[in-house]
Amino acid sequence: MRQVNRLLESYLLMFNSKKKTLFNGFAVSILTTLCFNITIVSFHLIHVENLSFFIHMTLPCIISMIVIPFFVEKKIFKAITPSINQILRQLFIFGLTFIPFSIFYFLKYSSKFDNTDILVNLITHYLVVACGEEYIYRHIIFKIVKANYNDWLAIIFSSVLFAFIAHLNEPIIDNLYYQLPMGIFLCIVAKFLKGIGLSVSLHAIYNLMVII
Image (cartoon, rainbow, N blue to C red; front, side):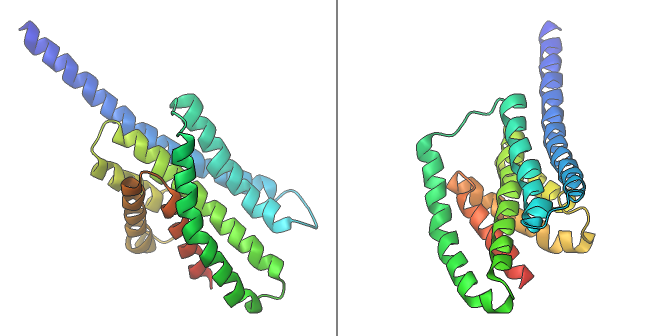
């Protein structure tokens, strides 16, 4: 009887731990989405002549999608900082793919804009968005869920949150047909390369090609 009780207690602890894992992943997605909307609205109240696009659009993304998630990951989830070699490897993979593309993109499409500063702002902005979304969904949430579930469930769960929470303001059909498959693909890329260097690059490239 004692053994049965112990097994039952162990199962309940494991079950509660798994539920908490999913809740934590969901909470990170909701928190960052709320922070994004609040910072966007707040920064639009600031009237500036220069750097208007950066202040109103890019800076809120940096704060809500990179800075706040970083502190959440370190302070709440006590994440271990990757080694220098791991960071340099991901930066190398990112640079190897995104830098040639950004040069090509600038040379090819600069004629479509009245001012090249606009194009530079767009490249910077969509790169920041890609960094933020990959960091939140393919790094933080994926790792949280992976701690108590298998990799594939972590991929699906983080991708569903990416499609339907991060893109809540977009049509559900678009999220189902485009954002969800893209989220799964990018998560698989990040999983097999053990980092988000390439997924950030691919995400940014996709964002930039879509707007042209």
